[in-house]
Amino acid sequence: MTSRRLGSAGATRLGEAGSWEDAVELLAASTYGHDVRAGQTLAEAQHAVVDTMVWNLRVLAGWSPREGVAILRAMVAPVEVANTLDHLESLAGRRPRAPHRLAGLGTAWQRVQGATTPAEVRQELATSAWGDPGSDDLRAVGVTMEAVAADRLVSVVPEATPWAAGSVALLLARELEAGQGPLPEPCRVAAARVVGWAAVRAGSVQELVGALPRTASWALTGVSGPHDLWRAEARWWRRVDRDAGAMVRRSPPGHEVLVGAVALLSVDAWRVRAALELAALGGNGGSAQGSARESARGSGVGSDLRSALGSALGPGEDAHEVA
Image (cartoon, rainbow, N blue to C red; front, side, top):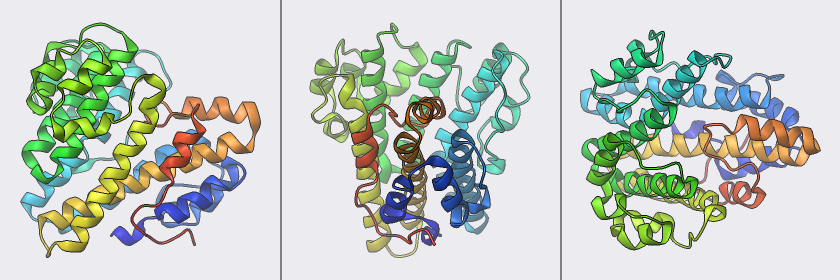
């Protein structure tokens, strides 16, 4: 299954394609052609990259025992978060986007997608393993689900604890820099289970860095302001890539190999999305840059930081290049 990745070399070729149109055409001829089609917009292609990743994980689920399906469900939780936020935005009037097809890998998505108001979305989450986000506000739902997903990952996949803790560190840092006020209590509680109350109560990024446990502090090394967070996120993904590659290489067949394989597929999808955006920034000038910024909503990629996008394509676990 990991042979379906493009790897850093393939992603670099995409980023150097000259335009996002050329990059999408190249990608459609690769293993991502399951969902990526020539002629798609940048946003559509980035969405389709995740669709292909989810399809591969559903195939893995079909081969996995019950324990493996639980691991897959915990690791694909960020996609369910994205689906839920997209649904909330569509309820607020934004043009709906086709959800990623989670099937049995969803926790509450099959019920959430049927909700017709934000209050109903909150109610469906509250009666599921996600728990009550404390509000039907988009920010409250998003940050709470992110924290709950990290907490669940620690419980279900202990090997992924540094990844989960690092992701919570990044979440707290982003929220501190955004200055949008206190986090919802359900988010704070879930985050504290992963990184401790001292970190959750920090009033600045500098204070946060000093309060984080070692399992999480690595993610914010060198971060002193918002301009550093994109690079920190790229570093987080590179750490996941390195750790997951080691799991796959050293482990006998078993759940650790599954964890590593899922993580490598996730890293590759993120790297490919970054490559598409880099191609857009270098290909069509200002109009492409605006399109790239729009497509980056929810992608975790800072489209105004070319150096961060470039670092995303740096050497990682080797994989097949684009054919």
